[in-house]
Amino acid sequence: MTVSIIIKTLNDEKRIGRAIECALAALPEGQGEVIVTDLGSRDETIRIASSYPVRVVQIARPARFRSGAGSQLGYQYARHEFVCVIEGDMDLDPDFLVEGIAFLERHRHTGGVTGRIETATTSGAGFTPDTRIGSVERLAGGGLYRRRAIDAIDYMADRNLHGYEELNLGIRLRSSGWKLHRLDRRFARHQGEGARSRDLLLEQMRTKEPFGMGELLRAASGKPYFTRLLRDLPELKMLALAWAFILISAALIAFLPSLAFSSAVVAAGLALIAVASIHHAGGVKTGIYAMLIRFLQAVALPVGYLTPRRNPRSWIESRIVGEPDAEVSRDADEKMQAYRPEIVKSAR
Image (cartoon, rainbow, N blue to C red; front, side, top):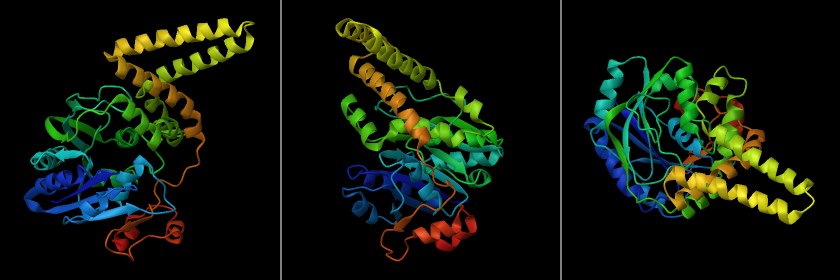
């Protein structure tokens, strides 16, 4: 049994070579494939990746950058029974796939499996990633999926999401009866050191990740798992508090006779929130970063929710690097109207 390894990339020229080498070394008995999916790198990522024996596919217009498009882009080209997803700055453990596949073969109702991820980076939302061993809600950071489970829910990742694509995938799988599991062993490790909070904040703004929460809620609206999703999102309570602070602050400024006094009250409230965030995060920079991210998410949530969506099953327009005639056009996408495996196979 073989596996397709999908490596999601965006401007990873310093790390992509190492990630590909580790992925190739991890293929069970050298069997399977590695697919590098690029979401619009402007550095040397594509050139470096193309020097390896892998398939490199890059998003093409009219498709737009979304973090959720990375996994789905690779999945629509994947050819094997198991699909492993990692980031372009991760070193896949050389022995994980053999053990992961063996686990899935023993547990027929498990749709995906992962392990520990060794990392020094701060999570994008300011929370510590889920490190529980055993049954989990999502394969945070990547993992190995059973293709049959993905096919049963129509698509892997929602191309419309700027974030939370793993939670979206996890809840759709669990709602269809599949289980997810984390083994007590290493899955991968991040290559780089932890980024500065300022850089993380700028990256969030550049990739528009704060819109992901609203897009996630929009994707789940009307679905039977919507209330379950709300329970899986403790961040919503913090966003509600952020909105309460914003509305109360606006009311104070609008209705109190003294602008100086109302501004002082608002500033004092913001300082209290900052102190609480710093205490919770255990550091000044991390705490301030987490607070700013929550306010950004709160403001971006309604915008993300109202953003028009494309059919998540539809083919993502892309080109296979080195094969100039392999690009899927807008016309082909419109004719499909929905992602269908038989058409995907004919396009490989």
